[in-house]
Amino acid sequence: MKGLFRFFHFFLISLLIGLPLFWPSNAAVAAEKIRLSFGAASTGTWIYMFCALVGEIWQRNIPGLDITVLATAGTSANFIPMHKGELDLAGASSTGDYHALRGQLFTKEKLSNFCSLMPATKAFHQAFTYADSPIKGWKDLDGKKLAIGARASPTTINSEAICKSLGIKPKFVFSTPQEAIDMMKDRRVDAMMYGTGAPWSAILDVATAQKVKLLPMTPEEQKKAQEACPYMVPGILPAKTYSFQDEDIPTAVTFQTVNVRPGLPDDLVYKLTKVIWEHWDEVLKASIASKWVKPADMLHLIAPIHPGAAKYYREIGVQIPDHRVWKKK
Image 1 (cartoon, rainbow, N blue to C red):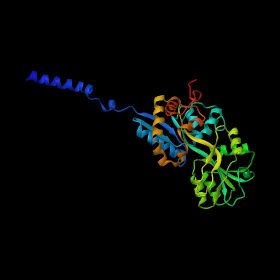
Image 2 (image 1 turned 90 degrees about the vertical axis):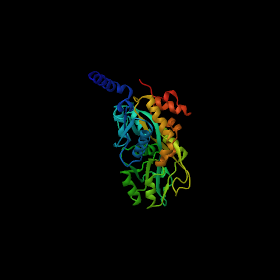
Image 3 (image 1 turned 60 degrees about the vertical axis):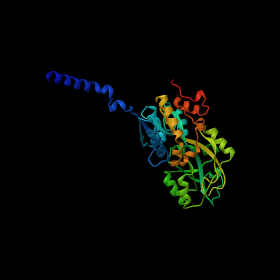
Image 4 (image 1 turned 90 degrees about the horizontal axis):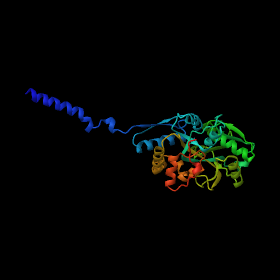
């Protein structure tokens, strides 16, 4: 009996020791977590909500991915922490990319540790005034009280740059967007200008209190704006984007974007790019402003394109030139 007991005792110990070889632990089965930090913008902004949306889609469709979306002071505030490697993904803009690469406006040093991943929407530079105003076009804004948003924000920088390129000098009124909306409702300013997706809820809000109209740019004005600001392209705000708008409105367009840290592995960035475009219908259900962009708009962006993203875009037929792809120096 003692010998039989010893046999079973030895058998059980051997079984327990060998069991992990045949029955992997949960830790071994579970995929290793990939944790990414995603700087968005201030809460309540469109780009913050967009970043949160795409972050959720990525987490749901890429196993083992964990994304933390962070509220920041704005897209311009994301460039320095990304340059330092403190952010993996960030809401951005073609305007911000241009100035960051040149060490202008919000930074004293040239920032280069970031890549383009995808466009988020077109930012149409929308100038509007009251329906009964004598202001007919952009040149008529000269000398007028023009609300343009918060000082040093990307849209304000663009508005000032466009006006300078056209040789007009409005009396700029700086404020939060909500304050600008209230001033338009009360007719305390002559017009408002803002670069953002369309239809913009602020214009719809003003239109509930005042009859308004959009101001078109001439082809010559579009050309001057692009020459002065290479990150801008001529664009058209199609008729009926707003219910009161019966005609196409020519204007200048920039892009709101998502940037990625160059150090992220190519295969991971490829997956991020592929997943979001293959689920773009989900994006559009929650973010109608994203209807204005498509993969080919990568060619209009300013920052170098991450190699992993470039691989996907080339696979679907977007001809990304070699000089546009980020390369380690």
